[in-house]
Length: 162
Picture 1 (cartoon, helix red, strand yellow):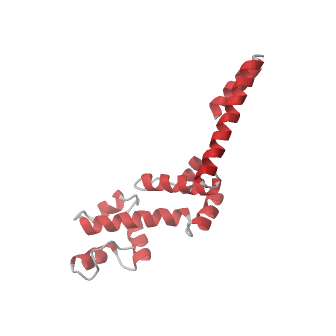
Picture 2 (tube, rainbow, N blue to C red):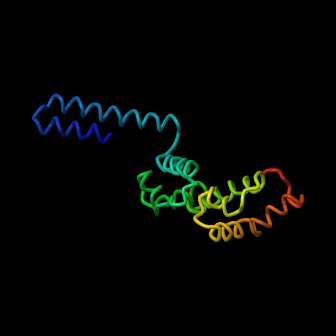
Picture 3 (cartoon, one colour):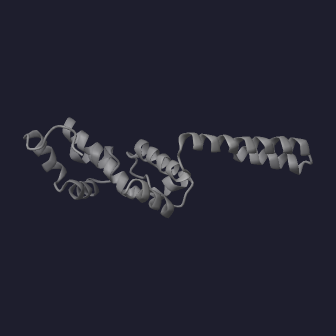
């Protein structure tokens, strides 16, 4: 879209009015296509922002430098607005969603590997073991090592834990 606007402006600034008009029609066509796709999918722009943000979080959760304001910039909304629409559609904040995503991935690794807990913390995007342990304790009411021990002792079901 930016390229179309730039090309339209370029034609117009060089007094090529027909070229500018042609590019303007391309802009209108692109907007109509976007609108038709949106109505065909039945998604509001807010829902699409949430879907886009969730996709970024799911693909990049392992990056310990991933920040919610960066996600908001990439989705092209304000951070506070992203927070509001996450709360509206998912019932959690973007940060809580990211932490829960990381915890769920850590649970899989705790259950299915013998990797050191500190290594698992880094693999799932926490910047340190301490940060991971605090988040895990808050989410699961037990430490990661106690969780792993409970799984291996059969005290917790090996099925997927929500």
